[in-house]
Length: 404
Image 1 (cartoon, rainbow, N blue to C red):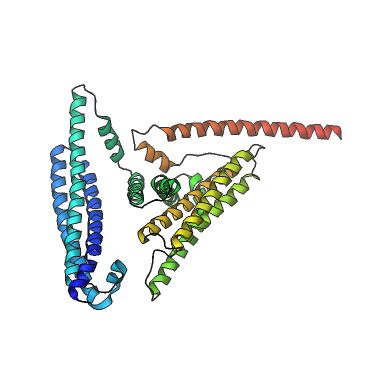
Image 2: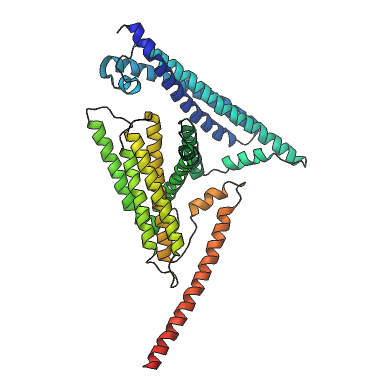
């Protein structure tokens, strides 16, 4: 194969890969610039930090682009792994390296500009809102929503929002056949990404001693299961790294790590029937409904794993589906174990991580705060019910002794 035909055949893949990678880097840097600049004390300082941040991002993108091009040249001469995994072939020549570097730089510039322009528009909207509020006018609801979403600082909020955006944008790029898969990719998938990220953040905070003893005790019960899953993931990573065969996203490693968690959820629901709270068990209709939900999720997971194994979809689609399966498995497992733990402890306690996250979004409807108040009412009601149950049991024992 000649040099001209090889580069003509592979340059669209190079340009697409470089552009997507560049836009991703640019958007992340632009969003970081915006968050840092919006914390400035005044508009002038914000504008100055935006300008400096954009300049630093452009220089950083130039360095990354040059390094990517140099690595591609090195790969084409020695290792051939980068070209093989990116294009499915070994012929990575100098023109392709240049195209990768140029498109990566252009994509990062566009992404950084998009993030910076978004921050600038928000800054102007915030300034207008402040001016209107000082003059007795009405502020913009959109400006208030954006301000409340970004400020005050809450790390869990930023992680969950970032994960949700990645899952949503990635899922919208996946072609769907039929209403079920469309709902799965657009609605269910990104929600599961957010829920799993929120649970894992809550677990990290609780095990590090930054939550209440109630939640530290709960996550102590699931710590071993999550640790085994993490060790299996590390083991698979080492095996694939040492394997001479090239890795494919069609391998069902991540999906099969998450699927057993769904079965664990079904077993947790089975345990609900033997746990008594104030002399009563959870109603059977609730247990049946939860079992149907988890079993349906497992059947859907099996169908998606079969779709991935049959290789009828692209590799980037297979990776998104496997991440979604893993997130849905972890989310359903932790959620089901939470219900069982609360039944065993006979107490409902709101998570401080959840409370702080929703409190940092001032435009939220306050549903979690209302749920916290209802939990306190339920705990008092449960305490009264247990007191009545103990009194009735003592009376029953006295009656039995009197009959004897």
